[in-house]
Image (cartoon, rainbow, N blue to C red; front, side, top):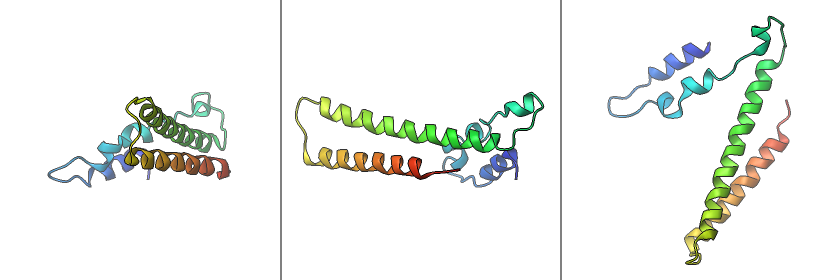
Length: 109
């Protein structure tokens, strides 16, 4: 199944009252974001597509880490002090960051 077929398949899951899964995730943008330079230069590079996908996934994980760190910084920047729910949120996000780093570190292609 090629990219366009995946996009069309996601559109078929449309519900009458809500947003499509593919629309919410903007799959059309993500699935068409791989530009193979080897095709442009007409020189085959066997694992180029895998390289691009892998590094794009890493960048998305790093974006999540930055998002979580920004939230933690914002909580600590509040001069009113921390309450228990914020402390739990900080721990949750720090644990998620550690998990993401473990996934990225253990992922070998």
